[in-house]
Amino acid sequence: MLRIAVLVSGGGTNLQAIIDGIAAETITDTEIAGVISNNKNAYALTRAKEAGIPGVVVSPKDYKDRETFNQALLDAVDSMHVDLIVLAGFLVVIPEIMIDAYPNKIINIHPSLIPAFCGTGFYGLKVHEAALARGVKVVGATVHFVDKGTDTGPIIMQKPVEVKNGDTPAILQKRVMEQAEWMILPAVIDKIAHGKVTVINKTAVVED
Image (cartoon, rainbow, N blue to C red; front, side, top):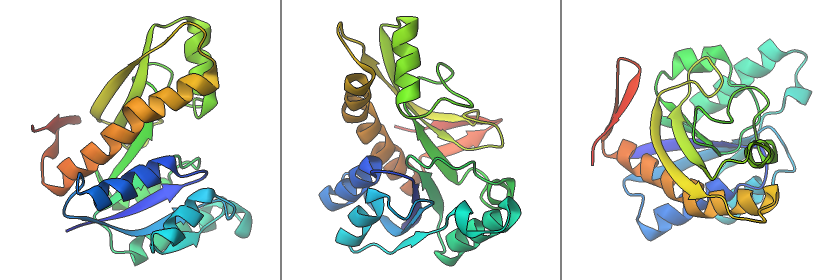
């Protein structure tokens, strides 16, 4: 059984996709050990509560400095005894101590086809605003392992999504969620649960 911790900052739509995937058995041999948020008002915590999943808040605002917060975040994850950490819209930089403690055991969902529109400053609507400003015809989402760079870890799975005439950032964001994010994040978790994802020479190898 793969035990996962899901880290969230906002609405938790990707968390809901995981919860629904486990309920529908499109994700098997997996359980959510807990949800951690840096934002006490995150609706994701409500989603967790309604699903009977423990939720905890670890906010930088509650600690004297970043180093203390980083340790508290790692302690919260450690206490859940998890095999995999899933970043599902978590808007906090993952501390290096956590990356060292969980090598190739932290995954992130990013709303673009990496390496396009990724890195520092590219999150949420900003990604879709940049894509529309550039005039690209295809966008998408990427699930990747987390390393010490920003969106630079091994890519596990990507799914393209068409840009349509008249798209606004909000409309495009919704389409990318529905047609890519909510599909590939559960799919990757299920593959990891069944040992079908390995990292060889900093490249993720995914079995069918």
